[in-house]
Image (cartoon, rainbow, N blue to C red; front, side, top):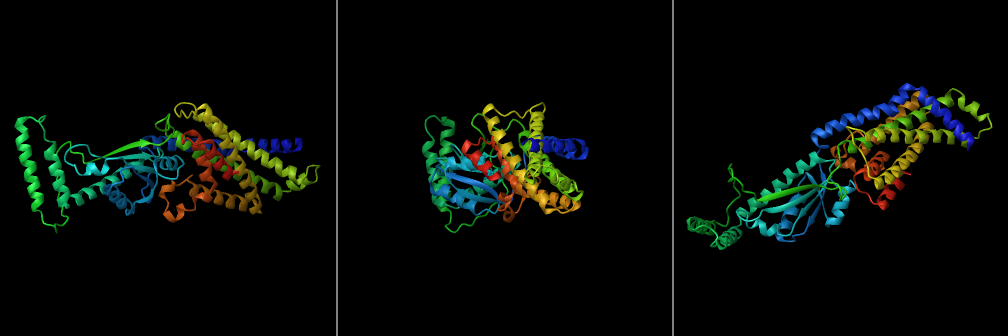
Length: 413
């Protein structure tokens, strides 16, 4: 063990002397987190609307709610999965869905009273890291709600029932001066719908409804831990991504250094010493592991300071430590793999960063996952970057259970 620690200390001293390598391992990730954190503070999250993965919860279970869900399932902008509320919330917290859509009880009945009474209520639980997508989702939901209204206007029986129900609601609490004209109007409306031909086509014109008319109401809430409405700041979203860049810089740097020692004969000289090959590789792995831990610790320490204010709770801190240790173990293995692939320093650097860049793109370290075509999104699970970011976010604000955290960390290890 002393031999391994001595070799690890040697590699750490070499890293500190390499100012360029130290910059990309420590300073560059901090710049990345700061830059994108301020951007996301202004715009509220990542964008992209292609194939938004959503979960739909039907608590109304009426023909109207079923028809609305069928319209959502037919929308090219959405990838809809029907489920219950608990499963839907877990999917959003775990990053497996952008949002969940909840049709509350009374949705269908409210659709029959669109000109009076309470509006239809659609509750949306959104992943707070995807607020821009949430705003676009509201537009999509509103569009399909108005499609349902358009269909309702061509349903003569439904409109007559709505008019009759409105007449029945006009009671003594309505001023006399308004009661008679209102009943006359609603009676005329009923007569109009009774005379409406059965083959009436769906024609629409440009019109502006009366002020205050709200046929459908969409309420949006962030889906995170119960004690918090959302991440404290956008930096809780960008810092895990930034730390991944620091981790990748460590893996690439130590992988290249191992190739350098082999090419320049340092490895041969070490092999002639009493140290075994396992101890030599163990020292390199230990140095890489310690460096990743130090980089993550320093960045999270800086993240706790103003203006970042990334401060996990005491319970979440233990899971964050577990996440960082698992990420370090994963990328130590990747470092060893990169050192074996490259036979020269140039080859190791080129191949290493090419592999790491692809991992970052597939895993969300460079390109938000929702920007990818659906065919590529199926493959992001093979990237350790995705699971690394998910593990750290799970500790910071996704409210992972211990079982879920062990599952993600197990994949990394």
